[in-house]
Amino acid sequence: MSDPTLLRVENLVKHFSVDRGMFRRPATLRAVDGVSIAVGRGETVGLVGESGSGKSTLGRCIVRLIEPDSGRIIFDGIDVLGLRGRALRAFRRRIQIVFQDPYGSLNPRMRIGPAVREPIEIHRLAPRAAADERVAQLLQEVGLDPSYARRYPHELSGGQRQRVGIARALAAEPELLVLDEPVSALDVSVQAQVLHLLRSLQERRGLTYLFIAHDLAVVRQMAARVVVMYLGKIVEEAPARAIYTDPRHPYTSSLLSAVPRPDPTAPGRRIVLTGDPPSPVTRPSGCVFHPRCPHPLKDDRCRTEVPALRKVGGSQTACHYAAEMDGIGV
Image (cartoon, rainbow, N blue to C red; front, side, top):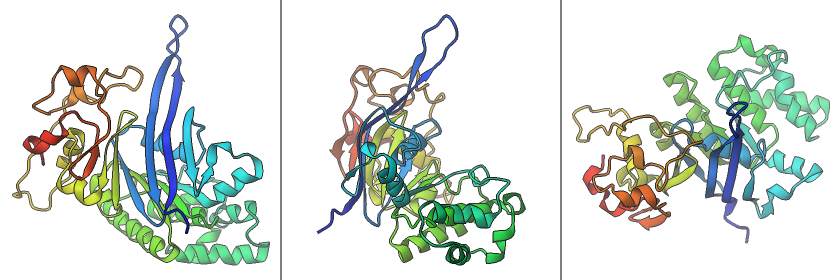
């Protein structure tokens, strides 16, 4: 019997050196700091956080666009960080990434047809004549007419370009897609169309998704489980229902309170966080969230002691006072 977990990330670390000028030592930016997650076969896991939380860096480490400093990435039982040469190429066929900016991820001098055909040729999935037919099928599958193969990226709208990006990722016949803010650059109506497309593709192809976003309203439509990151660390992880009905971390509650409500008279209050997120270069001691935390029980323990992820209610939460969250819930 195969392992139901397709992807497992264990204590992953990625730090960057930041030059601070001629007379100062380089600083260390802790983009991803000991993150562990698991994604089951056919599952969609939402990875949520503000800009600078480290979620996109984590996604790029998983597909090995960025090499992590330490930790493990296990994909279908294989240690990904030990792969080289042909084995690495075979892995990259099985896991693909869709980027936030569809225009930036396409070569502006390459027509759509060759751009989508490129992964087929790299992985030798079909001869030339069959590859052209496969490109037409892929464009139709993502809702584009095959004639778009003759166009350049600048001739397409943002939503059409993102569909091309999805088709290009599917060309390698992957099992897992890392979707890095795939709809955040699109209009709301186009967002809904692309999300519907992604759900349909997952159902037809049995795909697994790691869905990276900052918008919890979007993630709610896609994910069965949600992981919340803040300043390079996981602060909460739970099934989507628990996250949306009973959040146990103050940061998760504040993100949820910012989601627009269809009924403005519905109960609930906006939690406004003070200040900007601290710099990953000069992170606060103790709980990384404590300088902005609205929890009424926040004390010196929060400033000095790093909270561990622990089971509270239906969540795994990194908060000393997660059990007392009822007073500031949304």
